[in-house]
Amino acid sequence: ARASGPENTRDVFVEAMVVCAAFKFAGEGKVDVQVKKLLEDHLFPHATRPVSAFLSQTYSTDVRWVLRQRADDLKAMFDCYGQTEVVDGRKVGFVLTPAFVQMLQDADLLGAVLTPIQVHERLSKLCAPPDDDDAPVDRLCYAEFLDAVTMVSMSRDPDPFMAPK
Image (cartoon, rainbow, N blue to C red; front, side):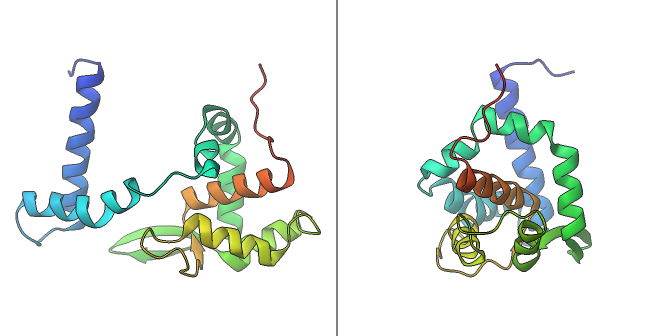
C-alpha cells in the first residue's frame, strides 16, 4: 500500500504519464523517448497556453461542484447529441458542433443573447488547438462539451454556477 500525501500524488502522476506515453507511442522507441514525445508534443503546448478569465472561472471549485452534481444529466445530453467512433481500437465519444447548436436550439437557449454564429465563434476560441486559434472546431470531446455548456451558461447569466452556501 502506498502512503498518502503530496509526494505520493507526484509519484502517481509521473507513473500515469509514463503509462500514457507507453500506450500512445508504443513501438516508437524507448520509454524516455515516448515520455519526451508526450511532454513536448501534447502536454507542454497546452500547459503553456495563457489562461483566459473564462478558463479560470470554468475550473473554479463552484463550477466543478455544479458539474459534478449534474454529471448524470450532462452525460445523458452528451450521449443523446453525440456519436462515437473507434480510434486506435477504443471507442471515443464526441458531439459535432452542429449537434451542439441543435441541442441549444432544442432547449430554447438561442436568440438575441446567443446566436448560432456566436456559439461557433466562441467554440473556436474555446476548443482550438494550442497552435492554431483559428482552426475550425467540428467536434467536442466530453471535457470540451462541459466547457461549452459552461460557456453558454455564462453567456446567458454571468454568474450561473454559484454553489449554495
